[in-house]
Length: 157
Ligand SMILES: [Zn+2]
Image 1 (tube, helix red, strand yellow):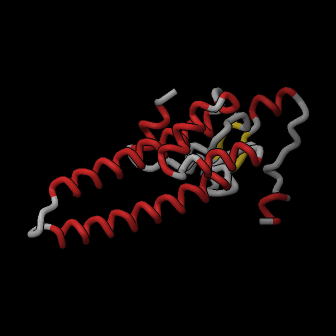
Image 2 (image 1 turned 90 degrees about the vertical axis):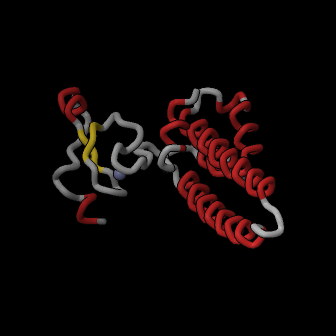
């Protein structure tokens, strides 16, 4: 860690020529990118420190789709791509989880009850695990994309 920080790659960015060509290295995965990139293209790590209120809002957005929807409508975050991305991802994930839960309940009968009970427990555990991971990632300021859900969330306003 200390060796990377004091390496000669960290040129001073004070002259315009250096500024134009400046590149930074992701502290999380090591991907090299232009200095003006907000998020690491390799892992989604936030390259600029995010205010705690934004990270808290992004983390709170995962407390079910209701919290995500409320945060989407808050005027404070209308133009905040980081918070809105996490809010949309939360809504999409919770939406699919609830729809699948509803279908499982609807289809279940006495014969299939055990199968759906098992499926329901597994799905709930997976959702709990995902929720914990996403909340921590959001709080760390990381733009962590869940496959499919994240791609869709990134396109939403
Ligand atoms: Zn990275």
